[in-house]
Image (cartoon, rainbow over all chains, first blue to last red; front, side, top):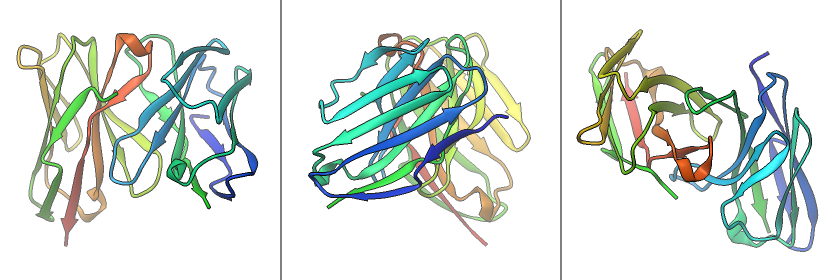
Length: 113
Length: 112
């Protein structure tokens, strides 16, 4: 199984809502990532988890809260988002070392209204 | 943060033609990877070239790497309409651990 599964595929939320994005992989990868991608732009790194511990937070606002409950799951909790947070949110996982490829989920298309 | 810059930003060609995309990066690397993204979907790994390699082939893909110029190119030969997508180069930035940092990307449009 070389899939990274993200749910939901689409999400519309109000600025006062709380929602969560979910990501799951069963490849035994111990590095997992959240990226944010705006239209016609490259993915921008948000968070890095290594062995279930948050190792990098790329100065992301606290209204985005990541969580890694176990080695297969990665969540992104959303609260009090702004319309400019509307984007495609991508989860990825990677095997050991810098010389391996990353596997991406299909993303969650988030719209904040 | 973005590591690489691709050019051209957009490329339109006819089926059967070759497409060449270039990428430049800023820091030293162990390897450089190319990814493809169909509209609004996840990224798919295409090919990885290590810093001690100068050229690599995979099917219709040919990648070159020039570490002295900090640049790479991706050549797609005999393009097909199904190659229409965005293409990104990516490197591992030591400041980001094992995470990939992506260049700005090239949007390729292949018409039949």
